[in-house]
Structure formats: C-alpha cells, structure tokens
Length: 547
Image (cartoon, rainbow, N blue to C red; front, side, top):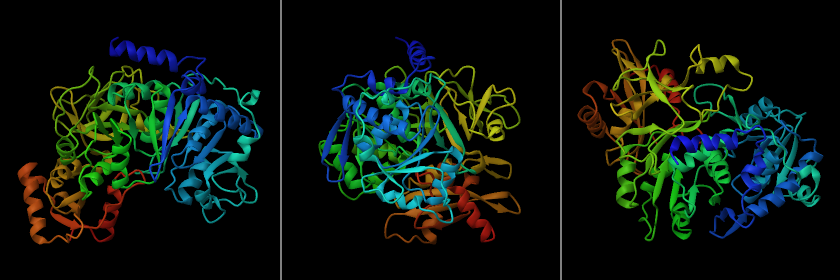
C-alpha cells in the first residue's frame, strides 16, 4: 500500500460521521493485548490491557454521567502518568466529553486560566496536586467545577476517584461509548504561551489519523517494538504520541510514573528493553551530560526528538554511544508532527545536519516571503507555512473563541497556515528551522536565526546549552548576544568568550558572531522545556540593552 493510500485509509476510519473515540482507541483492540506497561520509580511495573481499560473506563464514564457530564462538556485533568490517568481519559472520551490537559508543573495561575477558558465543570487531580486548586489570588472561591481526587482521601466538598468507580459496573448504560463523529471534539489543549496568552486548540477525533500516521511514518513503531515516548501527556507531544497515537494504533507503550532523571531513564531503557524511544532534546542533552557510562545491553533501533530543534552534537553522540542517530521531528500543538526525518522505509532518507526533514505523507509545506504568500527559492529564510489544500491530514481550523488569533495564522484566502516559525529549504526540499518569527534577529539588514548560531556554540566541549537573542544596537539595529550554560563547575571567562565568538565566525558566518557572551547557570524555559528567548530579551532591555 502506498503512503497516499494509507493516509486515505486512516482518514476514512477516523473522519467518519459515526467515529467513536472509545471504540477506536480501546474497544476494537483485543481485550488481552497490552496497551501500557506502567513503571514506578523503583522499576516495579504492571501491564494494563485493553480489556482492563474498557472495563474501568466504562465504570468511570458512568460516574461522570452521575456528575452531569455529557457530550461536549469539558473535563480537566491534572495528573501524572499513571493507570488512573489513562482510565480517566478514556472515561471522558467514552462520554463524548472533552479532555482539558493540565500539566502538573503548572502553578495556580496557569491552571486557573485553562479551567476558566475551557468552562470545565469537573477537575480530576492527583492528591498531591489538589493544593493548586484551593481558593486564592488566582483561583476563584466560588469555582463552578467539582474536584475528583486520585490517590488520596477527598477533602470537604471533593469526590474520590476510587469510590466513584467502585459505585458502578461496566455494563451500565451510562458507561456506553458515545459517537461524536470525526469532527467531534476530543481534546482542548492550550498552547504553551511562549509568544502570548495561551490559546485553546480544539482537537477533533479525526486528528487521530494524523497521530497514527506519524507513529507509522515518522517513528516507525512496529508491533513488536518496546515503545517509550518520555514526553509528558500534559503537552502535545506526550498526549498525541505517548497516549493517543499508541491507543489508536493498538501498540504497547511504556508510561513512567515518576519524574525525569537521567539515571532512571537509562535504567528503564535497559531493564525493559526499549527499542523505540522518543523524547525532547532536553532529555537527550541530559543523558549526554550524565557522567555515568551508557549501560551495556541497550537495544535501540529508533530514536526521535521533537519540541525544540535538535543540535548536531546530540546526533553524533547518539550515533557513537547509542548505536543509532536521533532523528529530529518538527510539529506544533495545532497540528502534531508534520515535517520530520522519518524512520519508516517509505520516507527514510539520510539525515542532513541541521535539517528537520521533509513533510510527512499527508502534508505539504513551503517557505513563504514576508509580504505575501509567494514561496521562496531554496536557501532564503522566510515563513514556514502549510499548504492547506494539499494537506489532507491537517485538522486545525481555528482557536477556541479567538477569531482574531485564528486570522493571524492563515493567509487571507486561508490557502496557507502560517506556523509562526522562520526557516528555509534546500534544493531537495529539506526544511531548516531558523527561529520563531519573533526570535529572528535583523542585523544590518541580515535575517539571522538564533538556532543557526546556537548549533555552532554547543559544539564547544565546555558548552552544555545556549540561547542567542538580538539586542538593540544604534548602528546595526540589532546585534547578537549569547547566553551560555557551561558544564558543572566551569565559571567561564573572557578567553572562553573569545573562543566562542571565533568559533561562530569560523563555522557559521563572520558577521553573525555574538558581540557579548553571558555565562549563566540556566536558561529560562517553559514547563515543556522550550527556551524562552523573549525573557532573555526582556532582561536585556531592563538592563539597558547592550553594554
């Protein structure tokens, strides 16, 4: 079957008017097949079958019906990776309700924003997270949502997840699955807010076609793989491809019920025989920096990265130490993954240093000029855009309740979706990320993407990670400044700053070197690990710009 035929087949399944999320994600799979292996911090583990999920999610769906939850209602979830999380999500979708993810690293203001904006009527929370829901400066005292507590005794006015499930049987009519159709809502996921107020992205059931296509073409997850996507399901990459994609495809996936630590990650990969691994670049950089040797017996056949551009030193380290390169993949909350260095035989090609790959089957993209919608020739930096008519897997149509923000993302005729990222292509159609549009540095008329400079800086053996910004300059408009995190115990000095400037001149461009190098302990990041360059720009403006 060709990739085009496979895309058409997936769209027919997930876009059908009678599409039923619980059926597609759970009930159609063999009851004894393992959906997830849930691993605890002490490496104890248990398997969760589709039969388990069907039984327990039906009971929870009946409990949600008792709380008045029906099709289209929003239910927020503030939980870590666990058995209860998957049961809760499938229970929500079985009712035809909408899941609103809340990342467990969020503070109260971020949680309140999402609860109010989504009009959530129920919040399911781990016991150790419920303190964030207490009335206070950021959380309303007369909140309209009910709180369901997982893993602990409920406090006054709260409900127990365990007791709600125990009160129902799997065969109650209220626990039956509701078909909302391919255009029906599945998730309301808010963007990270790196460039403004977070915006609600409605994810329909038909988006599952795109998620499964990426699992097949991009990650090349095989039926006998031990697949582990280490991303948190509070964010798009984790929710789409650690939970939804594997459930749709009916493949076994690992869930680690613990926070990230490099030693624990190595132990899981070795103990459970992980063969297909996906994670953010931050994870790979942390593994690379871990002083412990890479364990013997690691048997990875696929390694993938998404969320931030992958710097070259990680790719070469992985090839040398893991026996497999890490392939960089690009996508957004609004679409999932769409431009990738795919692993599947049908799309696999040699990795080109610095490239995020080519469009997946079902997607068409180009780099447009700044003024209109004219595709630029290879080598020129412009706006990365998706061609709507030629992208059958595209499912995003607009932000919830934000028509003005939606209009900013499309050209006037809606022929192109503008990603908000800048980049370029080469003669063979490979895409190269340059920056977020608002991260582009304009120096003396030159457009410079910070990632190009950062990719050179991190090749220095003393550098762990870096972020490059533009700072005001009376002569050039802007000049580059670099914020550099060195290896532990290395304070940096003027001599190293000079080395780094010279390195950029030699390896990238003579005009694009950082005029100032700041050695810092850490970089500001979102909870999902994306560097917030705008905060560095704000810091420099507050300090008066360039020295």
